[in-house]
Length: 426
Figure 1 (cartoon, rainbow, N blue to C red):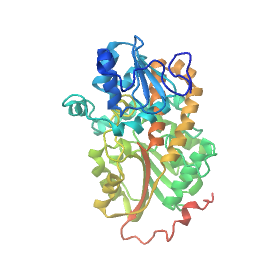
Figure 2 (cartoon, rainbow, N blue to C red):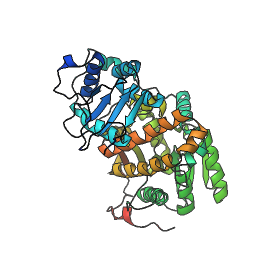
Figure 3 (cartoon, helix red, strand yellow):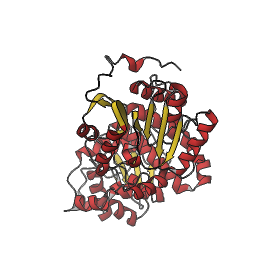
């Protein structure tokens, strides 16, 4: 990559005019020394950082991937004090500019920061953890958190999701599939894992715009109760059920998952566990236990991580307040107290990366319309969120776990895994 119009990269990928790692600190300004410390906190990622006066620092040992240009001293100080939060905030405000590919920049930082040195002043990590602490997901707080993200307007999501408005990881048996076909393939895959039969009852915790519940009813003859606390999503899902003529088989309920009652053959949750919060995992386990019968089975589909760390504070603030991607062991711990047996575990990390490539491309194609609906700050927030998520799945910062489970004494389980890859009729 060569960005000659900014003077950022020379041919061959080396930064033009940047101060390198071997330069004595005395030759740097105070702000330049802060830049160097900031880069060291990122594991000396091969990224050029440039001040408002043109002074640049590059400490990477490989070719420069991208650059960050600071608009003023106040921005530098804020980012230095709390980079996990304020790099994102500065990008949204336009007080830093990214020179080069945003996704590649974030991937590079993720891959480099494991080599980062200790924090540069005592107590910073404890202070940052307190400042960036996760919000609690009480029933009332959960409604506020979901409203902030999912009730910003269906017209916005229509611009870049597939036709059925599926806002979770798609499944690509063939990477060349369209996003629409891959989302249908995901819904079929979930139904095959659950071995749904006509007439069976299903409860879905967190149903989005209702696509999976409707798919189960239309293509598998299931009776579904789907819970969600997003008013806009529930209204949309009810309208789709009427259009498809399955209102008698699918009930969309605007309520918290903690209020699920009744007995069902299957439990499914696609992309909701991330919003439950670690402090409420046991509550979810009790809900699953009381709503599944003797031969009940279920599936949890969730963004996850290795190891268990708080979600990035900028994502917490701007995108998913109260969210926490669980580890695989934490997902198992939801089930084990109630003697559920884990039947199958699959990691679809690269499928989510490919899903995000589609979403990001569609979002960028629609950015002028998004800007007209909202403003430039909103465009930057969502560009950073989608780009950062793509980078996280590409580099293994985030994963996508599907965990299939059943009652421990149930013998109504598959003999082999062949059924997962057989085309479902209907």
